[in-house]
Every structure is written in C-alpha cells, then in structure tokens.
Image (cartoon, rainbow, N blue to C red; front, side, top):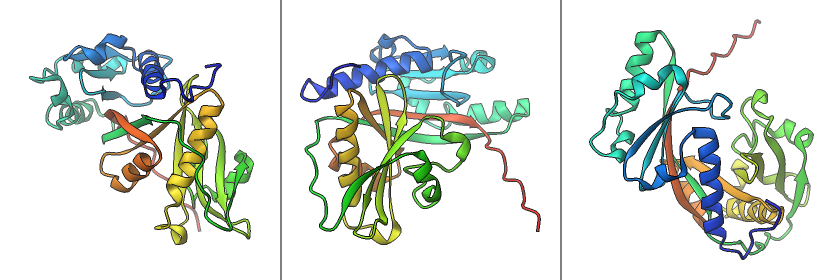
Length: 263
C-alpha cells in the first residue's frame, strides 16, 4: 500500500487486505468466504502458514486449508454445515486420530479471533510521567521473556519482527510494549504486553492505539489476534478501535521439546 488508509473506509480496506492475504497463504479464492459452504483447499507450498490444517471463517463461508500430504484425508470430512468444522468432533479430533495413525505428533489449536481496525484511533493521552519510545530488535532482546506477548518466545521466530513501541516511565523502565510483526505486504500484526506491576492501569489500549496509528500512518493495516478465551485481550482490542472479523483454529506440528540443560 502506498497511501495511508486513515479516513478512507478503513474497515473495508482492512477486510479486503486481509482477504487478499488469506488467498495467498491459505490457497483459497476470495469467494470462498461468501459461499455459505465449506471449501477444502490445498495449502500453497510457499505459504507462510505453518499449520498442518487450519479452519478459517469470516462468518459466511468456512475455508479448510490443508498441507498437501493431508488433503485427501481432509476431503473425507463432511460436516453438515460449514461452520460445524469448528466443532472438535468434525475437524480437530479426526485430524488428531489420523496423525496418530501416521505416527505424526501434532497439537490442536483452539479457535482464535482476528481483529481489524474499525476506525483510525486518535492519539491516546499518555499517563503522566510516561513517554513512548521506538525500540529496534536489539533493544528488545533483553526484555523478550518479560514482554513475550509483544516480542517472542523463541529467538528463531523473530524474522518477521519489525520494531516495538514502548511506554516507559520517568526512569526509562518499560511499562507496556507493542511489537510490530510483518504479516503480509499490506498487514502488520500487533502483539502487546504489560509489565506485571503495571497491569490494571489501562496501559494496553494506550500502547496498542499508538502502534495502530503508527502502522496506519506508514500506509499499512494493523491486525490483532488472540485466543477466543482471552477475554482481557478482547477488551484491549475493542478499546483500541478494533473489531473481531475472522476466526481461525487448526492443527500444528508438536513443538520440539526443550533440550535438558546439563548441570
């Protein structure tokens, strides 16, 4: 994107950009989200998506995007209605059983929500004694464990990390942090975390709004994701001008077990 989407039908632009990204990474046609049916497609081999299988819906149609070795099995799944693909017995449990049969270790990921901006957020009022700083990756490294929801759990996952906006206090200590992550050519994902001793002060929407504004001003669309059970994160998204637009859940390879440290 070359022009800022601020003030130009932001939600419509965001939905269109997200659909374009979905078609590239999930291998579906745009019309699959409008067809009132379940569409099962093979995942493109160059997709950034790492799941074995993922169900995606924007409320009208459901897409089941599957890696090639699993596509024939996926086509045996025939829920009565498309949205029932999110029921464990219709999708996740059959895939888990098939993975066991193949000797592949996998984990099921509960459906999560994807939020897109419904408005261009006004610059938030910063709490007294705080300021916002822009940190590059190197500055964030020492804080990765403390603010892992904004940053990363595993250093191998940081290729798409762009930068962080950090709300710091008078001493320069970070109170809240929003990380910007490259999702596609037009989309930038926001991750957010607040220091434990600073929670309950409404800092998360402050830093998310600040980051959303920065992303929009750069000509991109901010996105925000969280688990369907993370009600606190839902409130942050809503308070920051985002609306839930998409739901996704899937089957992923079992993460490698940590190597025991020698004494």
